[in-house]
Image (cartoon, rainbow, N blue to C red; front, side, top):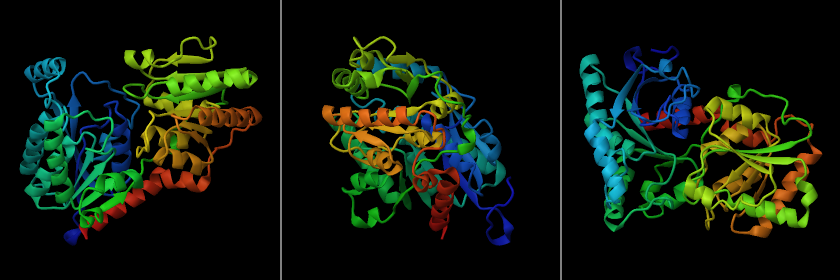
Length: 424
């Protein structure tokens, strides 16, 4: 048990039971965010998470995360080789509901619940509160079952929308079932936590007003101690970096179109500039990238790096880049953008109106809708002009009042207040 625990009658520590499929060392963005929250609150926390076979692992993500917990129950996934083969066959056949109710991790819920039950029986354990972290949304179904089993409040924390996520591709049957599942979670949870106000408004619009009153906003956080800060770009070169994956509708095309427009209007602005795209790119995203024909060395593709290195590369860049798929409005506030805030470098966002756009503007950065070629050209030109004029300036960039909102201490304080509210 950790020290400085909040207490209940009899001086017993307040017990938090957390459900998160993603947890270090699994190399998911959700892993770092959940671990950062749980290690920053003064509760005795038991966690059930996944031991996902074959998944990429990154030992640099919160390497001491497990030591901060009372107990860590790692439940294998998939539970058997037979299940893994069935999933692979279903994916090839594109079965309409397989892996979509609510997601491909649904088979993890039952063994996760069994692991918690066995732990509770062995240790005479009863939590005071349950919190479930989705994605995946299967975590929230486990959370509901645990709320029922122990008769305690449930907080359901969403990193993304569930049924209102435009990247989900559900057929009619899968959509109908998932709507029912989402409704059960929204009704059954005692508190609903989202990463942006835009997500709250989108998701809760279809539910009773009383349910919306249970919604809270808690953004992702960054930890300033994790950034190794160097001297910036090499020589006279200006380096702008993007760290993350390209897949589905998120491709480098907005950047390629912007660079072509600048090459036509003011090519000298790109002299001595290099854009580095660091991370995996699917074959489809590369085919749709539009990068072909750009001057050699203007855009380089670099393979994925571990989490610690990605933070260092961001902090050492001259500028940072966000690229999102076109949309009328985006509710997404990715953890990558919050990591960028921690890096303290100027940000250009080729992102639709919405949560990311407003945050970047609040920091003092530059944004443009990826569906507006002229707006992207103007924003990128202003961004590059700023970088060239402030090449030697290495102080932390960004509105300090906005930066403070996303510091881990500030976010953890808000999370702890939500936990206490649910307990009251």
